[in-house]
Image (cartoon, rainbow, N blue to C red; front, side, top):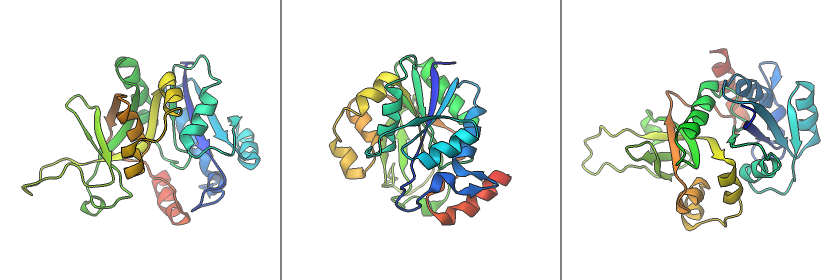
Length: 243
């Protein structure tokens, strides 16, 4: 258990929503909801909030979280994750739980851990849920994933995949969720690799792992969690928490 660590990247300088981790949501900072949800996962031994901002760190200390201060120069949350994971010598599995998804399901976190524990061939694991709204299919902000028969990712795309040529329907579309579990070595190798051609084309860094031959397991869950990207998303998140 102590070797399974959740890291929650949280930065202040979000372009679309500065200070987002500390915005009040149902009487608590947004990032506290994520931390509490991760704390309900049964297979996790340690939870760390990784931030480059003392305002976030101080708030996290107040509600009892373990905090790791990181460099402000990281281009992505994955790089911030790796900085912390590099110091966790005993960690075998590291999970990246987004700091802006306050209703993330603890069971989803547990299923990611379980998948890595049960299949030694997987280097990474992520989650997806059925995509049911036709309006989401052509939306490039909605990332789609296709898997093989064993549930491993074949490809991630902002385009509609798979493409149903005869138009008869019946195809099951999966919406990718931005939660990842890594074997620690895979994570540390990942951030050393340069961005790859498909990653640069789609602007999806998980393609870097596929292009390097990393097997990514995809756990299909019933529904996705509600993310807070812009202030307008707060009302939707409030409704999700009330449910």
